[in-house]
Image (cartoon, rainbow, N blue to C red; front, side, top):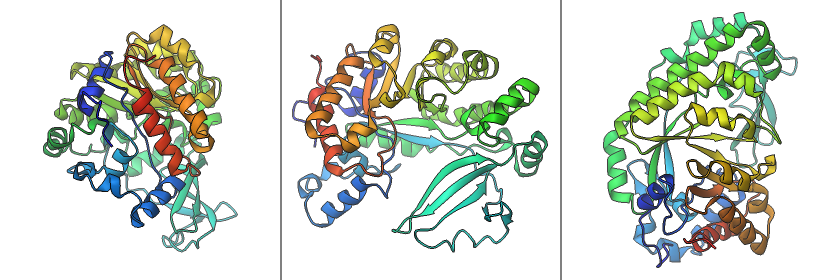
Length: 403
């Protein structure tokens, strides 16, 4: 797996990139590899039939670490991985929704859903869809907010706990340090703020229309919800600081196709200063702050950077982002992560996928500061062979100097 021409370890490669130095080659970051995806199933099948023995014959490729099994991510080419710290879970009930929108109080109702069936359920203030796949695995998605009224949301949090009042998970410093010492030549570990997104985890309890309504009619209510999540993130960062990280990964989906999900004025009014507090705390621990955001949030980027953001992960081509223009404007001080089109990875040919990787490397990688990878989790239809083409293209075409 490791190229003979590699002259840096994964840790050195990632750290050089976030310092805006040119590494030996561009490092790769992968988000999720869902167990129901085609590439995951094909990997298991080829492993079972001995078709990946060349990879598994090298003991160094077996990444059983104190922070979990990273072998699959390493096979797919990851040079870095995230370890998440969140708050301890809220003990709010989960209810299946009946067709007439009434709540089914039977806790076994969801467990009893047969393969191939679909349903809706209420969890943590959201209405979500669920489908039981033929394999028995669950596929879930967001549908709407369940706590549309202010009084219902406040009653819910008063009863089951506000985010800021829930204790943060503890940082496993010993395991983190052992990972970096024993496995840092192959993969670098970055701590992640789990959940508690200021915007994304807030509007989903009420829906976008009610979020816009309360921004206009009761802005203090929106400030209260945002600040509750900000305080929870600050508590999480107290634990993350124990790792003495070089970077901290966060997230908040702020974009859609072609534009943000909110106006720049709304971002400045409700989110910019809370984010500034979060980024100051990250910078005070000697780390950079880079966040995931689906969609196109380019219009918010100047204010986001002014608040202290150091990098953006996702960079979906499908959302009409001009990657070359962003690099030209912010590239001397900003980290770009992702940028590889999920449509191309799933449905492209070997030639078109290699060409796409090369274009994005040239768009964002000149001078360093770019970590290529899929914009999000691998899609369900993504074939293993295309994942391997993407991996090899990053490792071969991403050698510096890029040309």
